[in-house]
Length: 178
Image (tube, rainbow, N blue to C red; front, side):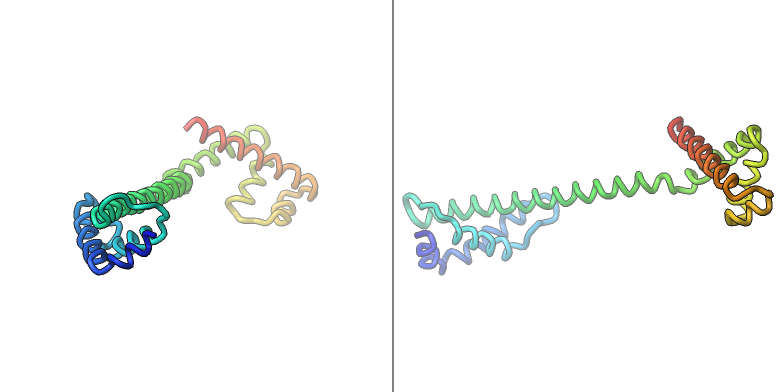
């Protein structure tokens, strides 16, 4: 029924919708979420899909209904925009928090922590600290470091696993305290 009324009243309705949409868009505080013509088209599409009845004077009822639908369309657009903005803000926050660990200051702190942990490791076992220095700072492979220290491959692997765990624990403790 409403579709028939709209098709009959379209001569005055669409120009009025564009004018009303322009006034509503101009009232938006921030940058408009929608152009007036797009808002008018969306209101017309929503009116055509609406299954309700009009009461009273057809023209006045249609104007009231169109204004209500236009306001709701602007509210829906604003909500979607705010939802997207909140999502983007969350993503930016996640990126910032993950990049904080890779900032130069954080990396300097982590390197200092590793160096202190290597010194502590040297007090426990000088050969183990030597293995770490060969692997970390001289860039030797596991086999090259094993040969240079004169260790068996299994012993070197065991010691390397212990050293990695020791250093990881030291870094974790330092980050928890920071």
